[in-house]
Image 1 (spheres, rainbow, N blue to C red):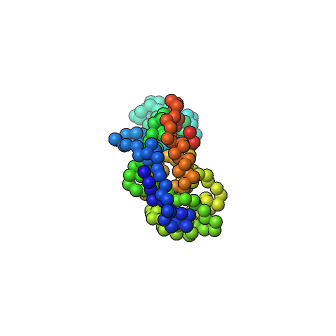
Image 2 (cartoon, rainbow, N blue to C red):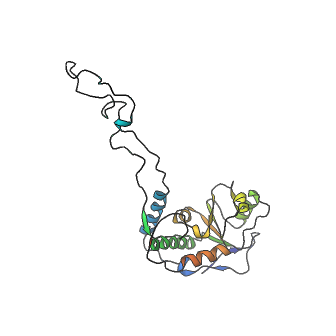
Image 3 (cartoon, one colour):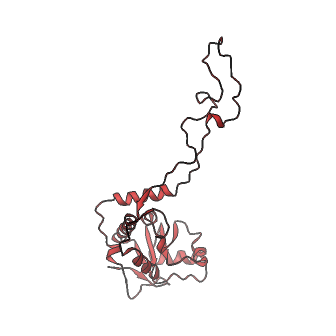
Length: 224
């Protein structure tokens, strides 16, 4: 299946690039796997920062707040009791919870193929022969993206990230730079346009066209 292809200057290429059907033409009968991979990506990137104090971790409370008898109040041995204001927290997060989701490597790659197939079906995939911004200016990159029809949220996929490429896309809003062998379902589904270079397209084809061995991995942006 062919796709719209442009030169590095933004003009229409004479020969359109071809998308492998095994990667960009996968039938998506339902979205359960995509949802699982999407949520797993978010869960595995979650920072576990919440931490509450138990009654033994709060300073003070060593003295009995009032006599055991004679005041008419309930018996209490510490003002840091969880039932008191300023006391400890019962069953609160401790900062060591595990929120990660595991998904098999085979399922992960299938989910990425499904996401790319949906993007290709909706004509969101744009191939550019080469991304070569020698000036290093973000204005030139923005003009190139507008010329090839990439609007709003753009995922720019290159074969390899370089300092020069990162510099010329850094300040463009709603644009995310990704390396071809670090694609994930989250970025592909959230992009209005997936702009990919020829070299990056070859890497994606080689990475995803073959079924992986039976193993498991966390869904993230890491290379598999």
